[in-house]
Length: 409
Ligand code: PLP
Image (cartoon, rainbow, N blue to C red):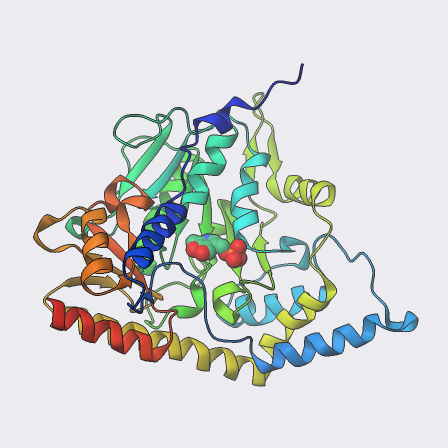
């Protein structure tokens, strides 16, 4: 008899976005003539950069001839892409990496979800709260999160609340944590840490022998100078941090799929007998066994974003989304709402008025203004009393949404 991995059974059955979809469907059935504006799910709406499209067409043509055909590529990614990543994303910021420290993948969701495999199941974990759900759920699946309690928290997870009360800056815990997930710029709150705030976490990790999983999927949206683009801008981080990046929100690759993970050679973890093992070696082994590389076409498309044309096109799209964010921030503030984020990230984190619950305000926004949002509580207990809106929509929809909210409130 095959036995199931019972940890999977601990995961709550319904998923946030399917709950939202059901509510939206019910609304549409009862209000067939209302036009909904969707500012809920974090998918992009603008097309890929022209430079990527051109490079991918060219790559397809190469595959059509035996002389230029590419079959299986290196599991870690092609050198041409890894070199472009190192040059533009790291060397340009004074960070030195060797090619064997960069692992190209099909996106940051897979990597942040899979990385835990190279560490023992009984490590303790810490997450900021609210949080991108993949970090917690992937740890539930291997038994590391413990059990779900009545307060919506997992028994073996340390939650670091990020709310308006602490200006969304998590407090350093007074106990040690083995594995810490940080995501900056943050999904869902859209907030960031300054260099000196992030340095406190790197110092904590070095002092406590903690591994930091640093998700920088929204790095391209940073506008302010004092916000680090990479955790390796902080001294000592190469000894304690693994960084995840994605082409999804940077260059519209949500459907094409490409990201990468940096595992510096200096990052190690211990065996029970105290031997130190480099995590680079383990992640390489894991990827070579379970991953067969990102497609050649995709990697050529990703490489093209680093050309001068590609950089200009990516910047124009990000500017478009960030102008949406500005319009939304201003519109919501004028309507008397309290908003956070949206300055270095494509997410606006909205405090519900009159201490309404997240779901109650979600329903009101849906029925009164016909706008779809995401209830903050879906991202963790500290998200209660907040809503997330994304700036990935079309300009005219953002403007119309603000008009509707102003008229309603
Ligand atoms: N990390 C964060 C914080 C995200 O918000 C997302 C997507 O929404 C991802 C990772 C997933 O990125 P990818 O499309 O590269 O899998």
